[in-house]
Length: 405
Image 1 (cartoon, rainbow, N blue to C red):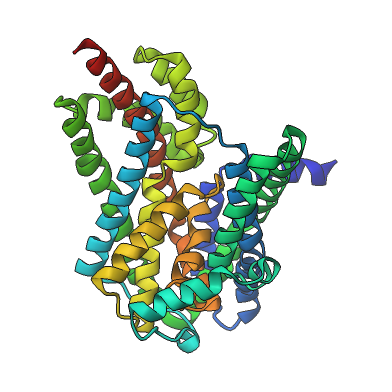
Image 2 (image 1 turned 30 degrees about the vertical axis):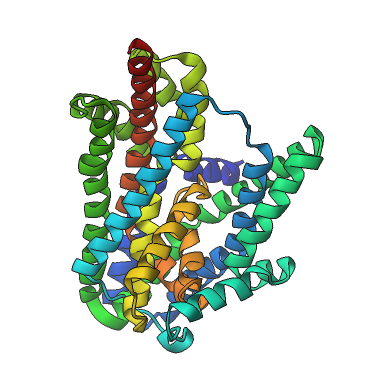
């Protein structure tokens, strides 16, 4: 009984608080007892667990989301989906610009693991070759290009030929894998303690200088997208001041999402806010859950910034054409981001694979992302979730304006 109570109290305690405690303990132990190298094993085990489950998670999430997707969207849904996708692509572009202006070098081991491609032709050759790899081998070898390709095909096949019961089984399996990832994330405080211990014991507190630069770049790009580019989309559509609505969404939706770190968990909050704004219930009852799945501006920023940071670290030259390709990859990848905390980080290896950067190197960047995720993931979720209401309202207002003309 005592053990069950302990487990219950552990799971009910804020993951943010637990990660902060793990980070502090790891830093202190790294300074005081750097010879206790066994503590660093916790970080290795945590990263290995993420590395093992991430390909399976991507495969089932993409397959299930396509299989269950509805069709026949009306004009408002076309508008809101367009806003979701355009804003996500712009977020990735903003991240590219920020990364080019303020490049970040990460402290990664075995950076020679990924050889830089010779040019954009090599990137496309690598893309097409990996795309048609054996699907089971793609999952076992973390070939995310192949995973996405086969998952999309299988998802459409299920949508066309499978019955509701079969699609339901696929969706249930997707939820099971997501729950498994949530269990792994529960051990993030221990893993981060080990990762921080190893970094501090080897490099001292200077290691946090790099992390702070990376965090500032991530949050800066997200805020620029939220405060400048999203309102610009709103203004171009409606010729109205977007900021009263934006600040309402940030206050009533973004603030709670910051602490829950889950767009899915914030859906009821967004529904209530839409009702308060006087929006059409038949519309927002679908657009809000849809936004929680595909409106992932913050995730696109995270995927792009982390990928370019790894590319800069290993010496991969990113051309303008390849940067645009990365924006498209980040946009599509962000739409398949898992709803669990740190879900966008698990897609960084997929984006890195387009630059022929090895999975082992990319997963080290994912580990760095979890260290700064206390702030990064909270800001990302707040901006994603508040954007769901913001663009839903914009689409509803736009439809009313068109009907009045």
